[in-house]
Image 1: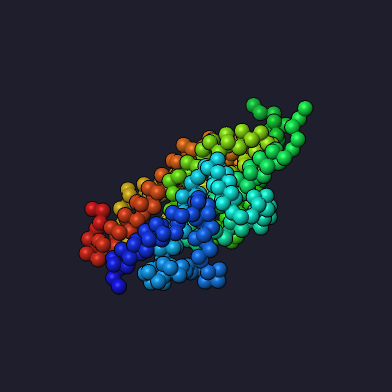
Image 2: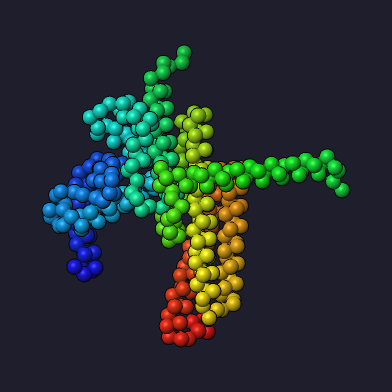
Length: 151
Length: 187
């Protein structure tokens, strides 16, 4: 396959994935988590059964990798206010309690593994820092809502 | 004329400032090399230099600071200031590191090249020194006041580093194609 044909196929796979899967996910944060889950922990390679069967595993993996990086950079550019909203949407769309997810996220920091491999280190650091801050803001709001009003 | 106690005080402040600066620089270096934060030092210069344009605007903008302040929580404010300071310092350190690598690579190429243009080389070195100076200034300013109001200086450093990388790339392309043809690329 020549490089230009391959590029067109990757673009087609990317568009297909965007329309069929990503557009149905509630927010960018959930999209990032979903994309990170298509990556093998040991090899770092991406896999998606549906996409691989419609195109081929190599093209599907490349399309997933690009989509992952793109969503990551998009999220990293969000303001803290927007990121707190993303967290709210993500927590609301989950079947678990928001309090439980918040506790787990603050303790284990699972969002660390949502970072693509080949990204700018400073942007990766900003992303981690922003999520940490957004969680702290969310926690502070929860605490304020639960504390009894002052007389 | 400065009195001896005043001179002693100035010297102490200067030594302490340098100590704090070196300590912060070392902690940023440690932060930057933490593998868990995806901040490997072995990334190549091109990757380190590619930073989305929104990045500088986000880190050095006062918007997030205003948002956090509206929560009226001292703990949150402290956490925000600490986190942003580290991110900003990591970016400055990364910019310095990337541009040093670009210049090292350029020096390596120019050593082997026979067609050097003095004015262009001098301009490149001057821009490099200017960038390192701006980065050091940024480091001091971030450490003392935080990154929220340093957007202009950070943007300047960002554009300067991009210009140096582009100029170095342009020179490398011109030199290699001229050497292939056997002519001076800059004459």
